Length: 162
Image (cartoon, rainbow, N blue to C red; front, side):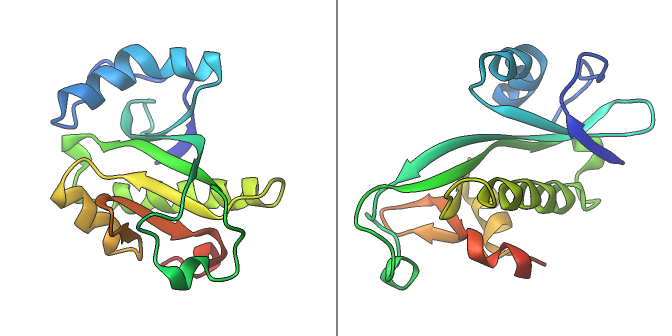
């Protein structure tokens, strides 16, 4: 399995993660978002270029509401630059095979590269539901107290990701 930036030759027609909105995104909107510069989509593909999972990266900022004070102790008191890992999905045929963890590790590696060029404090994920939230928490993501389905991961912790 390889992870690449979404390209026209990638086979996404049969992708089905069980979530209609995510299926529709990868099939109809991901390329448009990429062309417009709104987000960059990365896909996990098999040997036949069938998409087995994907995620998007885009930029954002967050305020201090709900962020643990320990994480923001030495940071300036204005919105903090972040990278959003969004639209994260794995095809049902590939679920339970570690594809999600591989995609998440790849996303963090990409964020780490970005953080060497520009200022980034956190990775942000907006979990779709409780199950997704628990998936990210297993890897050290921390829920905001103001919105538990929004999780953050300090960029300076990426080298320790397991």
